[in-house]
Image 1 (cartoon, rainbow, N blue to C red):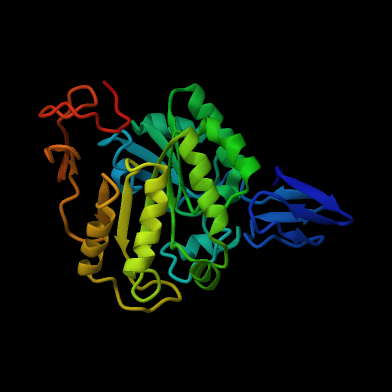
Image 2 (image 1 turned 135 degrees about the horizontal axis):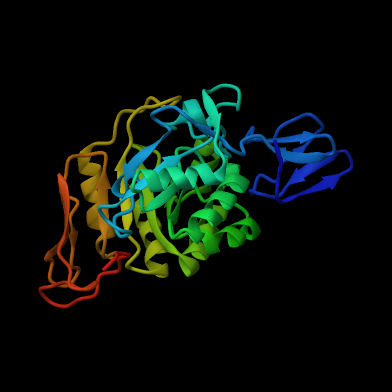
Length: 331
């Protein structure tokens, strides 16, 4: 165990200040995330170094799988997570890790230095803190990120965005990219499906946009967040920040406690049509479709994603019309 960051004592209780739940944790009890414990008059993190060692939760992913389409396309990222989460989504695909306790899974103690070494050994350009919520293994992420940054590796958060402003701002100098899961645009959805609130997530997106590369994912669930009105509100919020933020609509599949029928492909195509009225880069996930990046000016394909990534740019510009494409890439 390691002493946690961001908490204060309230008598014998500990008030965790890491995420908007601000749990008041009694002695020998854990917070909602199950990863922080009030023990011996301090708050400790139970997941420092406790990265899951199973093949599914610790391995190398294409960057496009995060999904990040405008951040070093064609590169690979060493990806890992720890037990626990500060959301409780009824449709979680990784529920066997996110909704577990530290003693529920096969894990291994890996120091931050080892994580960085593994990324180098596997020819990865980045490390992704993913599968569960990086906020709940914040201390582990921060220490690993600092070492990775010193060795010119990129750090990526795949996050639900449910984090308090101060810890977010401390971490942002070490974050090179974020995919933020904006699950819906109503508090009702966040409360009933995720056990959380919408406003802190929106604040995270607004703050992160000022500091680092961001892309947004929205999983469309039939009858819950897939109406034209829901989609339009979400798109309006993103476009007010920038019409160049990539947006990924993804198809829901039944999982965990949610048994609603899968999202029809037609819903995603409709969502894309709505979004493209205001956003320049909209992609679809979990269905079979063309996800090439097109120049928003002349519609020339500048990044092709059929079987193998093919990048057709001059500098960061479209070779046909010279329009600048917002992308992170080496030259």
